[in-house]
Image (cartoon, rainbow, N blue to C red; front, side, top):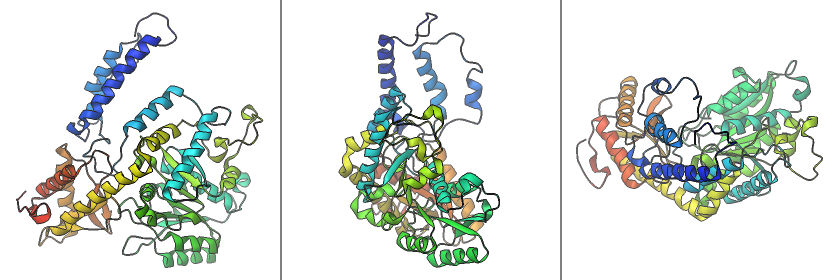
Amino acid sequence: MGTNTLMPDMTDMEFREALAKVGDWIANYRKRVGELPVLAQTAPGRIERALPQQAPVQGEPLESWLRDLDELILPGITHWNHPGFMAYFGITASAPGILGELVSGMFNVNGMLWKTSPALVELEQVVMRWYAAAMGLPADWFGMITDTASTSTLVALAAAREAAGLNIREDGLSGKPPLVLYCSQEAHSSVDKAGLVLGVGTKGIRHIPSDDLFRMRCDALREAIERDLREERRPFAVVASVGTTSVTAVDPVPEIARICRHYGLWLHVDAAYAGTASIAPEFRWALEGCDQADSLVTNPHKWLFTPIDCSALFTRRPEVFRNAFSLIPEYLRTGAQGVVDLMDYSFQLGRRFRALKLWFVFRYFGTDGIAARIREHVRLAGELAGWVDAHPQLERLAPVNFSVVCFRVHPRGMDDEVELERLNSTVIEKVNAGGEIFISHTKIRGKYSIRVAIGNLQTTKDRVRRAFELICAAGGIWIGGGIGGRTQCC
């Protein structure tokens, strides 16, 4: 490899040898990732300066690629597959998912049309039906895979805009009444970004207040819709959240669905994190009422052990998506009958074979195995919450609905919010600097919160206990009786 001999690609023997070496590197990385610093050990610009500024003129041997992986790239990796990764939403690129990604790359197909890759299109439809049924959603919903929930939400709200009947596809927004989009004040920022892309503008996005459990208030939603109607604006969609980003709250979807039916609004459900939890039947309550939604997104790359990126978008109204997006130039006409051409349901033309890795995950774990692992993550979060609640100098700031715990260090006598934010920000910095654990923060009703998210397949009780100990140590407080009755000072 890496010679001047004119070959179209690696030879079969070279490829087999390279595959074995790269496979060994990947397997060794997976084995030792828990021993590496979870947070990238680099400074801004260091990797860029260390890399050549021009591509090599002559090919280089595989050994040099792998050496640079170890010496240049690995120090700049924040290891999302690390058992101590408890920031944002814990994720796992499971072994079967990685194998599916490898095979997908090998096929290198584009599923824009059924004709360009029948297996991609048909497997995607089957796996999406598996997924819907596993969560207790209608198995006959139309489903397709996008890259992330940001894209899924944008596509769904574009369909909602089409469903409003304003002929925006042909005429554009000029001369139309101002569009209005509604979501909770706890909704993910991707909803706002979708509104910006779709021409709604920040003035047309209503952030509805939430109740004591951080759920959208339906009375406030009704009032906002009525006010906009009186002022001759055009409400067109509501986004409900099942598992909000900060505290994993679940909006009252059944009541929101009734409001949407009354006013003729599209209901999109953002279940990017918590939707998968309903594969365990005891968490099926979280999707109550979602069968009445017009569209729903959940992300296998969050809690279904599938390598990023993989987002699942479901709808009971696929014909609206087609009306919004179908645009077939002559060079893409095939004459195929009775098939699904996925390019007709989104703005994306190129489509990777993402369904393969999700298919491999389902086939390896099975729905019972997935449910068991979700239960374990929720159980570990419950234990952590118990330790927090038992500690006199820790304050939990939100309910623990699934596997995310939000709390802060709150020493006796320190009640100034500026001081508390400074303290807890320092706690996070100290914990993350140690390299064993990576945690993130949020703000909950103005209170700065430590946020611990459990979702990696390799995260154990010992690892969660270690996170708790490090947080206590960084906050200069006693561990107390929260763990095994110990009263050790940190």
